[in-house]
Image 1: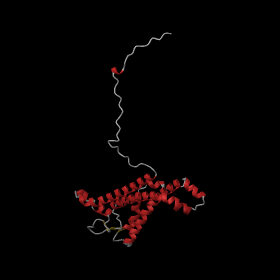
Image 2: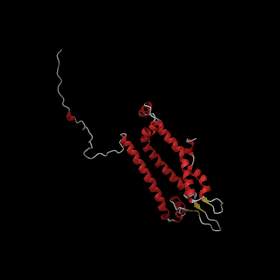
Image 3: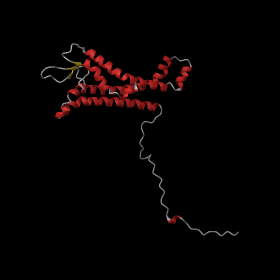
Image 4: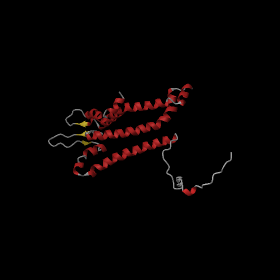
Amino acid sequence: MVDSIHFLPLSIIAYLLLRPVLWQDPFSDIEYSMLERLLFEAFILTILVIPLTTVLIGNEMRELSKNEFILNAKLMGGSNRHILWTHLFPHMAPRLFILFGQQFIQVLFILVHLGLFHLFLGGTIVTRGDMPDPPKTSTFEWSGLISSTKNALMTGNYSIVLAPLAAFMISIIAMQLIVQGVKEIQQKKVGVNVFIRKRTKEETVEPNITPPVQPTDFVITPSKVVDH
């Protein structure tokens, strides 16, 4: 069941679950405060990634439990809590941060997709009437600004949507660089060479090329006659 979630579009699931709360219809009798909408959206986005995150963490702990120092700690009488905090957690902490960075980027993509469906962080303001205004965000966050200014792409005013889009791209690239830095530090600790040092001119070795053989390199000597 958990593996099948990899093939489900999380943005569509989040849209179906969040629309009844985030879509503020003026004719609806049920109203939610800003804090309730924020907490509900944070809860739904967290629930969506918990199954995959749990499986990844379980696989990592299962692999670490096969090491000899874990088996020795169990033979010495260490409790599960002692093994978890003393032996497993120091090795899992960097990997958990890498997993956090990957899920952070995934949540940013979900927010952008929800913004294209006019479901914004904190709620969507909807007006009714003969000439209703387009849905707009109540918190003016990045995904809401991208969705509300996407029509500017049709008119050629790219500068309007460029600022929030650049902010999203910078955030994603920054998190990817942080995750990559943590990976390189972990590789250095285990002795993996991350960077390949370039050779200098003094270190370059000239290839050993044998010159072609010339006829003058051979000397013909008379053979000796051996008497039997």
